[in-house]
Length: 461
Image (cartoon, rainbow, N blue to C red; front, side, top):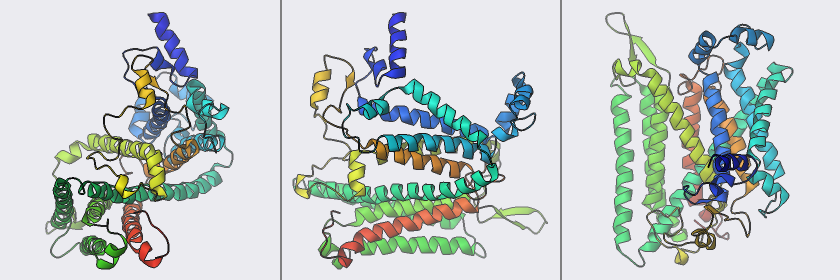
């Protein structure tokens, strides 16, 4: 049995899905999916390393408990006794530079790969141990780049541009998701009128969340005689939600897009509410002197001392949530359906089959590979006839995600004093979230207005 396990481990290092062939108790998985999860695993490893580099207390613990650490720092010229060059924003920039180069290399390597049996496809789907070595070498090599000041300055601009492009892709997918949701459920009303009840219920819930969220923020983040900036912000965003709702059901839009409705605008309103809340919590604290001469925080809710005691827990929970959200975005952005959605390509409405979980294929349908695997190996080779997703676009999204992680962990433009506890707050973070909110509204309005401005063109939403 041990020999079999060792064989499985060796197969994992060089093969595309060798481990599952050697383990009968594993569930069935698709080869394309395991490949994407392996790249995601490498991505998370580097993010975890960056989080450690942005946590001074962790490096202090390493220095106190690991023997010969100071000697190692001196011999490697890593910045004195505490390896200062291995912590802080500059170290995160260099590690993310190595990871971005790794994904950029594979993006170029897999251009125009449509056959999973080609040499480049085998490299994409296998050789995991050697890829891990390559990733480690690239991340380490970034620390030996000459003229560090110029490198960090130029790389910061590259990171900013790539991060905003990553945000744009995610916002486009959210808008297209809203249209696809409404289109799928509306198609179900032709056969079953109960789908009208589902549409109405979900729309009511989303508008309740949006209105309730804005009302709660007005209570906790404003005061009667102060916090004018928060009042203006909430008023503007509330007005934007009303604007997109009226636009979605206006007669001129309905004539060109009969599938436009309040479900899409309700979802976008919820997202606007979430970004508004996230932005308000990111604003630096505003302190004033009270009648007793003490500093008090205004324009923000006071949760008492319990939140400050659990600051570390909140920080790490927030970091975990960040990793989960980015990982989910990377995986969902690279599916074939998402690629079609970015290009506004959908199936004909009459071919739509309404489902609660409309993002996935119809339940109970086995592909030819799934039927063949029931009595055979546990791996579903779902790319025998061709690739099921674009390899090059997959690596390009992870390249952009590497830049987004780098800028987020280093507090965007306030990077000098950034730590793992501060990347959630700051004016840079606030304005990035505000820009994302406004961009999301503009993208949604564009999908409504574009058919009116270009009546000769055929739009799929």
